[in-house]
Image 1 (cartoon, helix red, strand yellow):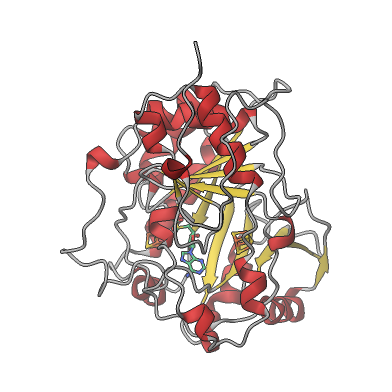
Image 2 (cartoon, helix red, strand yellow):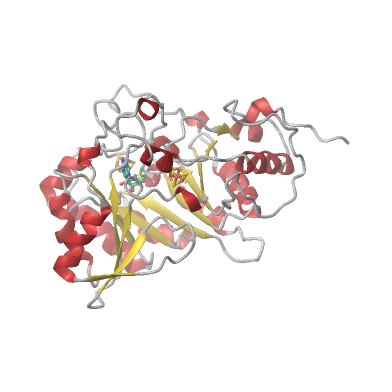
Length: 373
Ligand code: SAM
Ligand code: SF4
Ligand code: SF4
């Protein structure tokens, strides 16, 4: 029987991809993109909805009650997600992060985690499965998530001052409930825990030291993220970005810090340790110190589009392949082809241009809540 060739137009989003014959029955194995970067990390958005309205991500004026979120029928099912994940793992993915939107809003997420936890890398190692959450439902769900096979969580928390945090999540959600979720995650062993704090100058930079103090000696790794120009709705301005170097300087002068080596190539955070042994912190400097050079991350949107960069404007439609009755080998071939043609390096390009460059302003980037953070 001759294999059905996938029309390239089905998966191609832009004329930038070359018209080469689709590789069917692609050999399994490691992939490199056009800049020599391997594929290691897959982020899967399981919902585009969220119960928070963080102004830097889903500003209320845009994501209001009339906002058209994806209908249920558009979402990849757990079986579809697992099928794609298995193919990605055969191609070198070692780590899967579930995200969104708020991933804990996806009904029965534990079932998906159980399915993913059964996957193994070609070398026979279990997959590293983690999740990023605002923790609003974590106290309730931590135990069942752990039971399903989740290993770790990253919790987003932008400050300890209740008024500041309620203002930033814009749904009046209290800090105390996030802290309860963090405690429960510790208790059930979802560790090591990471805490993400997006720093917006003039909004929550006064929370840097209180957050550092709170998470010292806790075993959790606090990471400070530069406010990024993701999406097209958050009204990003460079003067609201607090460079990581300044964050490090503030913490260094208060507690003393020394730099640490990266755990692995492609790690997004630069690591620092407290000189007095109180633990570790990290900074993610995508604005002031682009790290595209070893970016090994792919993103699968809620409706099954494959994005090659957080700042991409379009994705490759894998759902139409899943629902078009193509075989695993054909889908694997499509993924190989897409990754091998990848040359995205938005942050590096942006850093080389003036902040008000029209080339950057004119880009229609997808929203982070849709593509997955
Ligand atoms: N809702 C979950 C949460 O907040 O943890 C997961 C999805 S959220 C899009 C993933 C991460 O992206 C969060 O840590 C969030 O703080 C971060 N994020 C969202 N918008 C951002 C921006 N404009 N700049 C930097 N980080 C951002
Ligand atoms: Fe929701 Fe997370 Fe975005 Fe905040 S950062 S609006 S919690 S998806
Ligand atoms: Fe990776 Fe794109 Fe971020 Fe560069 S800008 S590090 S290519 S996701």
